[in-house]
Length: 165
Image (tube, rainbow, N blue to C red; front, top):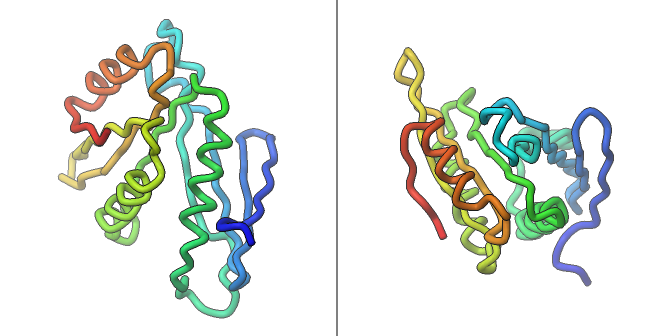
């Protein structure tokens, strides 16, 4: 029995991945091109994607039960997306319900569990005019040909960073 759910992908305006859990919950992961994050003259600008994870359908209630196959499935989707090692993912934790810190901790723990020495995550925070702090992460493959340049550019865009290797 596989340790993750079967998923499928669609490429339209964005690259989408979908999977359904044994509890009937349907997840969508999208990777949205975000080339405007960096100066367009950078050779890696066209390989930047924002990642969004959301629940599309949750059956009869709003509670999402713990399911260890969900994190494994999300990791498998990331591995699949990173078949092209030039890709760069930017992840911004949703602040709408004030649970962005919990999301960041969970995503960070998942990253540590599944990075397998292949990926680096650079964490940053950006405060807006109302002092709301946005938690962001940049994820890239260690074999990305522009590895150092990407981290340097991201640090400049966000004003600083801390690294999880």
